[in-house]
Length: 286
Length: 336
View 1 (spheres, each protein chain N blue to C red):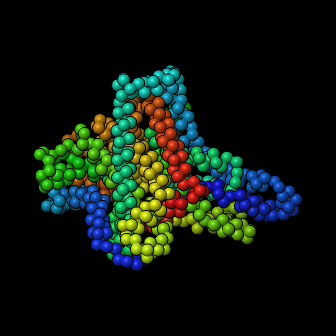
View 2: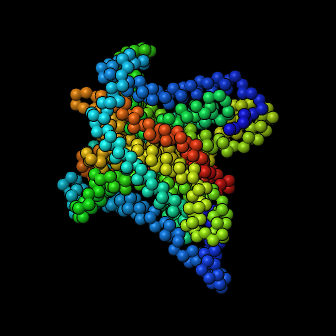
View 3: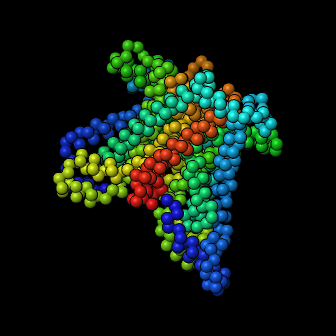
């Protein structure tokens, strides 16, 4: 992709530093992954005793047991629904909002962008209490139980995915030459058709980046999930705690389950990382 | 950032729309303000976002501020609108550093500051090192890049729970290496309780956030023109000098965004301490987010918890404002 940057070969001191630094970083990054994989293949007594680098009694039992110890499949479905819906909602809404901000001049634009930008920095805990109270209130007065429901959780997840999506997409849309959609409108497209036929296709990397980010954060979110869910709507983030019982901590199953819940996001991320880098570059690194 | 290129375009769009439904009017009133000619379209596009922003941010924030002036305990949750007023009591208690609650809050604030400085500083350092080392093309570069992004891709709780396992006293890999294999400690240490918990927290947070710094800086390095390096190299600058004189200065604008973002994320981080330690963290690692969570949802004092949230928010606003002021003065003239 990129050519060697200097005509001179780098000196030995640089090459050695590079080898050492990169090796240390790679070990640091992968150590938990190795522990996760190897421990998930050990029987319970082996993960309860001294740590072994190489598993002596290989078994795939934990991968079958995880579904029985804890209703993992149900949590998986809950997480998929919640993260998926939060992603779709925030991306669609952010596309419209970012298009308006990027292409039009209107009163209140500055207020809007500053509000969006600043809410991004607020701690989740700040919104947790009031949202909890609002849900309790709505439940009391209308009978609609948002507290403990998936819909309620989806709504709370928009607190972090929506501002990020809007902010990133404004930057991304700004980097698309406006002559493109103006030309489409000269050709007789309405602004909405110009958005969907010109701007959105040109912004695919940015939109994918935003969607990946929204999905990943929703999939990994713990705070709201632990307060706002009940037995039926529990997500993976909370459900994984179920493998630690009063008598035993099933570390091998915890590791197996961790691996299983990581696979969808890690695979998705690695497939789409090209877009993520491109999206970050255009949206944030300007 | 956003308002730079707008003036001409709003004009043109307006023209096009008008020619669609009877071109004459557009020409007869050429000086109608943009926002009228555009009609309500931008507002219509913005409507869903505004409604949701109101729903998930503005209204909760107003309620949060209101609650911080109330005595809202578990007895009033069902009917929190009628909770008794507390005036400024919740705030007074929170900043009374001689009394237990204020003291604990101050302690957790200081712990959070130390934790944030360490974690952000080290994340930035590792991110820069990795990005610079991977700037040039060599065999294995793309594999390493993928490896470095793994901590970023793993779901937080799955990764942090694995770290909790690694830090276990009897069966964890950390004690196994430090005590059994290297013999560095007399006896296996406790990592998740006591003073070591702070170190454990920093390591996990660092592991989780340096890849993001790497990702951002890597993207930024791709934008440095190659000729700069070539020119420097012709002038006889070695690679270390090039890094010091070209690479690091070119990263400044990205660093400014990056450090701010990392600061806010780390300062507000709830997931890492919660998964690592549970509902109440050891004193040495009592981060402010967990602390507020505890005083709200464990001891059920929402009024007090809200007051702490508002104080935290004011602090973050102040830091961000000062930071933006300092950094924007630094780059006056070069940036929009």
